[in-house]
Image 1 (cartoon, rainbow, N blue to C red):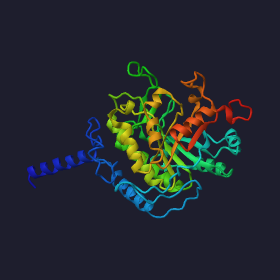
Image 2 (image 1 turned 180 degrees about the vertical axis):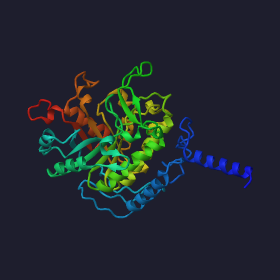
Image 3 (image 1 turned 120 degrees about the vertical axis):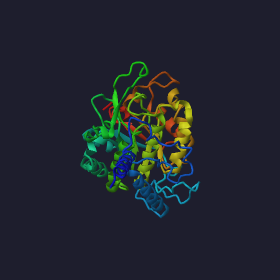
Image 4 (image 1 turned 45 degrees about the horizontal axis):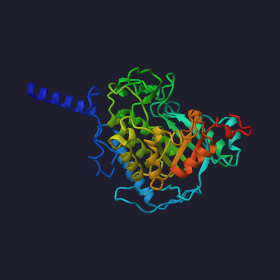
Length: 397
């Protein structure tokens, strides 16, 4: 074999390796624009060398086939729809009828005795419990859902429904939510620091961490977690929601792009709905990093995507008439209330201290409920355990 042929083979081998493992110092792994992929049946599947892509497509098609068949749910408030509005829309197995009355749920980070006492109330329909990614995957592909199973059993033993909030981000510098095995160059450390405040553009300080969902290698592992969870929990839990879309990261670091983050979030939401096709799947969407007041059509595109992929919508802050929310997600939650499988909102601890712009006083339960019912049209409010009215004495528990 002559030297020229040997050199040719060596160069070809190196090019093949380079194609398999993209250079993460460049942006060549970025997602295609959503408009360019409008005719793609999968819609959220983008051009990448990540090995999960073919798996995602197969699962998405399997979801379409499963959703097209008759599915009888065990939840009395859920019905089956048998029609689609466009050729590419999935037929959603689980849908809340518009006439379904609003339900009140508990939101908590753990099912302890205080939570169980709240669940004794006849006006509380279920519990939404928060779990972070790291707590569920100790090593790559090694999952531990024992805590979820135990919590679910305790909640359902009281005749109440169970909902999971899956966190891939945190609001504490001490809590990094991604598994330890991702702290390598292969995943670019897996997470990125995020800031919380109005001066982050000038004085960025670490207030928490967020999984780099714009990185296809990170996203592949997150979807592997969703798949493993669905294999055990699909149809057994009432709902699952992904964390809020609002983030504040250094846009010049970690190969971040607004478009990559936006499309990565949509891909995760669509994938979650495809594997949890017997359980409500919701994306918490409050703000987009480059989408204030629907800039770049972020809310229009995301809600159209949710409507065509059986993804419900909601948010972490039910804050009636608050200008920031009214300028962003609220109009779309209200507009799409009957186009999505379900819409939900949460009253978390910080919201309890917000003041009503119309009164100048802290929100009352009546104000929360009236706005949720009459303006947003949501079907569930998740109430923080510290909500005063959940305590029989009227004092926050």
